[in-house]
Length: 99
Image (cartoon, rainbow, N blue to C red; front, side, top):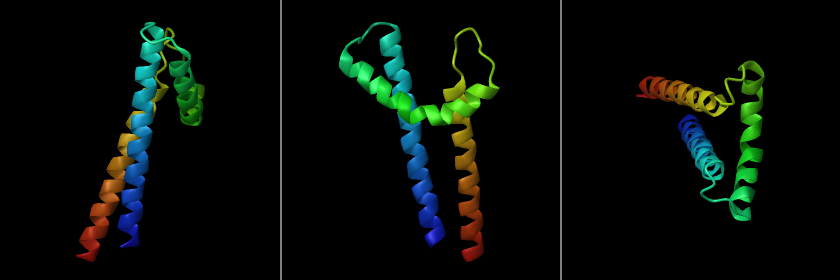
């Protein structure tokens, strides 16, 4: 039972991180296209950058710079999806063993 609880907690954490990355993308678009260029939006962007930078840093070391495009968020989202699949398979295996 504790294993399923841990798996559910991991799902919640992955979902929160996913939404943080999506919010960072949207905020960066607002700033890039000068739609919302006030201090509140910039402080939100700064906070989101501080949260996501530890995730992006190792990937940015490996990925080459591609014309100013940052693919680190996409790589993190793909890796998170792979982790979710692994977690789901572990949960299914656990449930099959228990049942």
